[in-house]
Amino acid sequence: MRIVVLVSGSGSNLQSVIDASQAGDLPVEIAAVGSDNPDAYGLVRAGTAGIETFSVPLERGADAEQRADWNSRLRDAVLSYDPEVLVSSGFMRIVSAEFLDTLRRADGRAVPMINTHPALLPSFPGAHAVRDALAHGVKVTGCTVHQVDSGVDTGPILAQTPVEVRAEDDEATLHERIKTAERTLLNQVLAQIARNEHGLR
Ligand code: GAR
Image (cartoon, rainbow, N blue to C red; front, side, top):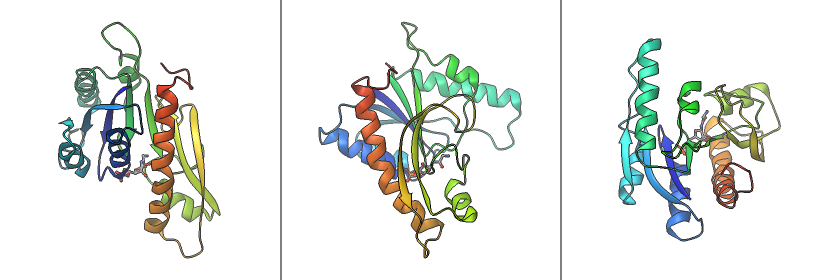
């Protein structure tokens, strides 16, 4: 299954997909890794693994027209690699409904987009899920892989893993434990999608 992965930062979850696919443990070919951030370490990880990279930065303070233009350019960059699935893995931008509606291969087939999120959705959507869960005092949080729709972390849930919150946790320790669970979950869901177990292909 041919995929494109989008990242904004470290790309440690991306690394687990690279490792599993290169080890032959995951029936996935990463056609390219893209980012809104040309300095994302995830692009370095991809380059080191011999995977093509691209970046489509969004200007600071972009207005509605500039955002629409950014969405079109990002979509065109993704589609130029002809993926069957688009994976948002630590990609910290929201794409538009138009982006999703027009994310189609040359033969017209829709390209599903999935996202990995560090909380048990629908709890704690958004960019600060781990901090928000800690602030709320939950005793269990976790991670979710879901299909992306035009809302913020609202699309259909594909799989989740619970992670216990420990008394001594801060945001960094809890996020690291969540990411360990996330890496396994993301690879499991990709394998399931490759076998068409979620009806996305
Ligand atoms: C992951 O925990 C991912 O779920 C989260 O960013 C982290 C990226 O880590 N994404 C979001 O919070 C999206 N709302 P990584 O760059 O080391 O893979």
